[in-house]
Image (cartoon, rainbow, N blue to C red; front, side, top):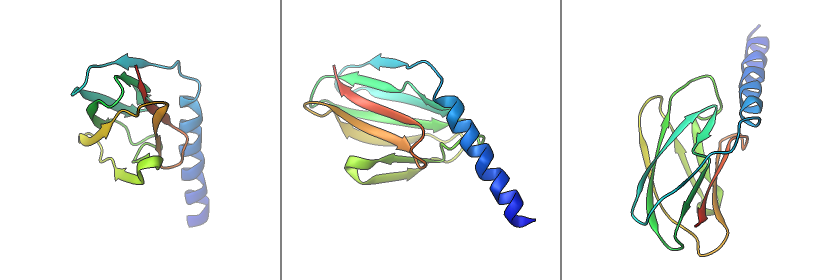
Length: 118
């Protein structure tokens, strides 16, 4: 019975993540030094944050639901992993790369977002 319940929980989480993949992409352009609120629900909002190369930003992630795979935030290239408690802002200081993107994902790598050069 426990295995069945665990399997159902994983399936529900995967379905919630798959629904996020069909959402339209949202982006915001900000100035250097900005504090950028990012809502974590059925994905990241905004998904893309654009700023000048080399700009220091503070991203403020707030998870607003337990019905998704957004409990963990991962910045793979920074080797950074943070837990996102429900309805509690979590600040992450980042620097916009000179080129390309600084990607972030959920712990299951299904929600995806990025900080990119403006």
